[in-house]
Amino acid sequence: MAGDEWFPPQPYLEHRDQPVARPARPVCQGDVFIGLPVVRGIRWKRGQWKASLAVKDEALSMLIAHPCSARSNETHNLKDDISLAPIVPRAKNWGPPWRGHYEIFPLPDLYQGADYMADLSKAFPVVPEYLTDRRIACLSEDGLAALLDRLARNATRLEPLHVPGHFHSEAERLRMEFDLWETWFRGRGKEGGFQEWLEEEWMPGATRRQAMRGHFEEIHAALAAELGIELEPA
Image (cartoon, rainbow, N blue to C red; front, side, top):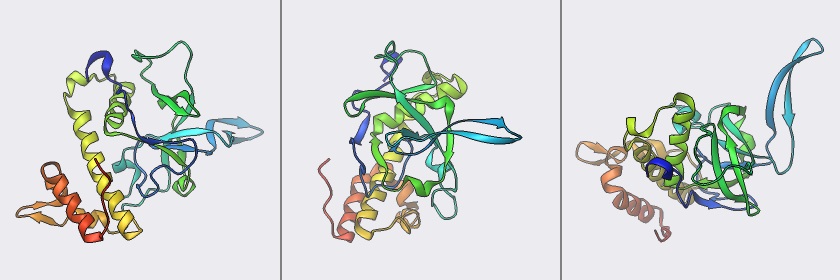
């Protein structure tokens, strides 16, 4: 997509009003969570710094950290603090084709049929254990590409024409990796061991990770067969 068509018609892999969306899928960039306290700001009050929290059962927030930033390079577990952005109802004067406002990522028809938007300018840290069983949405491959586009535009004002194809290429890589990881979890009941498996040799001179783009379907089918589970229709 180019120009004003940067946002896809189907941004979600899955979304629902109640947790948990895609329960076997490891936490990934763009996931939406419900019921987490949102940090509004830190202020000096009565001789000490205090964080202002908004605590609502229906508060929504989105993970904006890339997996390489959100997860440990050694254990591949989520780090102690990861960055989320608050999600608020969509401004009434803003809609498709979602021009300008680079600090905002649209989330149409996200929750209870209403349109929302993530404010990328107000990121706050969350301890990952509190994300458990709170996810209500995962982004599709096109949705991830749109989020990567928006994050780059907001942070650097870098236009996609300066990095042609990069956001979609990275979104495709993330989608394939997390599709495989979800299948791994479905079969083994845990995340551990997947990244090591991905680094094992798949063909002469190439690991599964290196061969993934050209051989994804073969690798995925072989993993499912090894685990004895059926893959969902594409």
